[in-house]
Length: 198
Length: 378
Image (cartoon, rainbow over all chains, first blue to last red; front, side, top):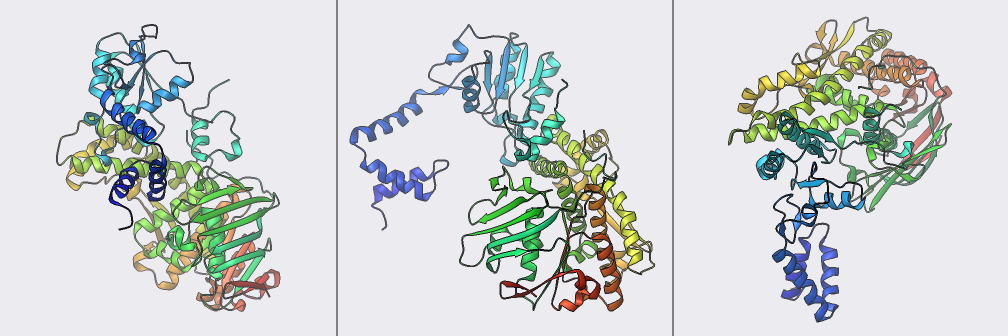
């Protein structure tokens, strides 16, 4: 046997993580063996804790420690605008810029029949429920500018617009500070298509 | 909305853009090769399986990001090596185009040494037209071969076309998955509409470009075909298998076909079913042409793309002729030579015997001899 059984098991578990191949898994496993018991226990505890204590916010479906997440609980935020994103990490990205002060809703994925993902697999029902409460006036669809992101945005717009809400989609175009000659052509094409008058 | 509206417009002539030098490392059977090319004609000769086509292919790769014969990238890495690189200096701008292929990762393109976001971003910087024996499939093969021909030509001219094509294919896969799943469970109309909207949008872009391209290519191909001494009429037309020329019409067609497409489990309307019709003397060359007629039809069509490229960019694309001249009889060979002389800018021709290129070309050409992965100026 190449590795002692507990080591082999640890490597096997680490290999399941995204972005970790067999080599990295081995390196991480050997590293963990070298750490102190206290450090190793802290890592194990924090994984256990995260699994135990975290859940989805009852309102926005973001990952939260409480029934209602901090953003939803913050009453100083704009209660009339709602930004729809695919994943919890998208909220973190938008929050970092400190510009947006409205509500969020996390779909936990995008429509993709190839992967068996339709509206029932996403948090669409929860979104419609929130919109039905009547406080939200504008919905910003902030899904990625991919085929699946566009399709999901279109699907939601078809459902939401008839209710008379304002619906918008994030703009896509040239990254700020980029050089035209080195921009990828897909970005350049959409930047041209969505150019704006000056 | 579409960038193809000016497809048939003539552009002012601009100075010829030519490959000044090309460098290969661990590419196919070349360990290391650095070659200065003539901005005019280059004749590469040598016995079979010594690396003539591989040199041609390296230029084709920089132009299209693809290997000839649609092989997988890793097959271009020399046996025993991990990474193949190809680079070329384009004159007069001195722009350097590069491509590297490494096992286990995606190929990477560079411009003046700087990495580009995607390999496909290299497309359009070195327009080329390549004619090889495999192109006979354009006439003889399935409709998919002819669509591939149109797609490759249009993608190299218009990045916007490539984008329409990529997104169309993805939306098609998604809708097909939904059609198949509909046999198990019901899906509401909206679930289809969101993919159909993208199919109709990108599909309309694809059809518009193909239609205009074929309309401009047809007369050019006919002219060359006549010069090839056939005296037969060559006619190209783009066949749309369903009548849905616009976004709105395509949207309606897709909605209407849904129920019988569920039974078939696949999308049957749209540009992915279209064909390029090639007629010689009003008869379909694929079914009725002799081998000679088919060959002439392919050469005329391909050489027409050279003329098209010239009209479109103001400078003729790089011409790559892979062992084409040696397969032709004396008369057609000398006629093709005249066409090459009158229309090409820079050209790289391969042949087993240099003499196949003909005196007229050889007089002007820089000559190379290939032997076992090394090339010498002759």
